[in-house]
Amino acid sequence: MSTLSTFDAIDLFAGVGGSSEGARIAGVRVKWAANHWPLAVHYHSVNHPEITHSCQDVNQQDWGLVPAHDLQIASPSCTGHTLARGKDRPHHDMTRNTAWAVVQCAEYHRPQFGVTENVPEMLKWALFPAWEDAMRRLGYSVARYVIDAADHGVPQHRKRLFLVWSQSKAPIQLRLPRREHQAVANVIDWDYPTWSPVHTAKRKPATLRRIAAGRAAFGDRFVTPYYSKGSGLTGRSIHRPIGSLTTVDRWAVVDGDRMRMLQIHEAKAVMGMREDYALPSTKREAMHLLGNGVCPPVMADILTALRQAA
Image (cartoon, rainbow, N blue to C red; front, top):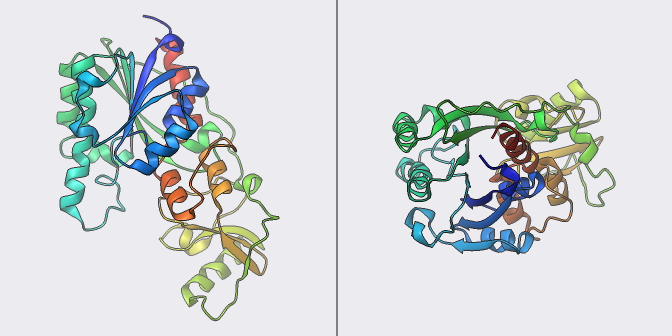
């Protein structure tokens, strides 16, 4: 086989470009990327102007218009699999179907390799055995990797499933590095100018109880979710990676008697994005794009290991 560094790749369900950025770091050329959300496509193109972009429902893609490639990277919708999906089942049934675009594209182009990213709960999908069987019938062996971004130097505990498929008799075995965990304290902007008092008339009692529990456990400085269970009840030490970033503005920083929400530039660092990566100035949109993304250092390590194993 060729070395992966010479491969051409495509990025399906590319979002704001975390996987494409990881490929760039690993020396892999992404030549085409697609996503259905115009905002995501716009910022992907701003950060990666060398890539040809398609803005449409990927499940409706004419694969004949997609350039030939050696590596398919894809992040089909995870909302139908995640435990946080809520009660909107008909919608989420449809989002789970996005995974079949991976199969359709692979059937048409037959690339040597592919990396499909999703939440680990995808393995519990009733149709996952059928999906995996479809890939095998196309001649691919599928290796499963559940990877925590914190093990790749990202200051965030973020477990994701990476299905690495290859035209080989046996699933490919990647020798992935295990990097030192990074404290979220290192990316928090303690000099950020805008904070608010912890104790205000509008602060809910449940929030104050979480903050009191966090202060008792970790001292004056810690992070805490504004909702949810787990760390939401106890806070979280700033001397370890933060919990998973979501598409909704979730994490608060507490510093003594003042607090504020995590800001865009800090969230970029939490995702392992480069400092100058362009994002919307509107925080709601930026946090949604980041929370829905792939950590570039993780994809970079996977593709580097894949290059070495090829």
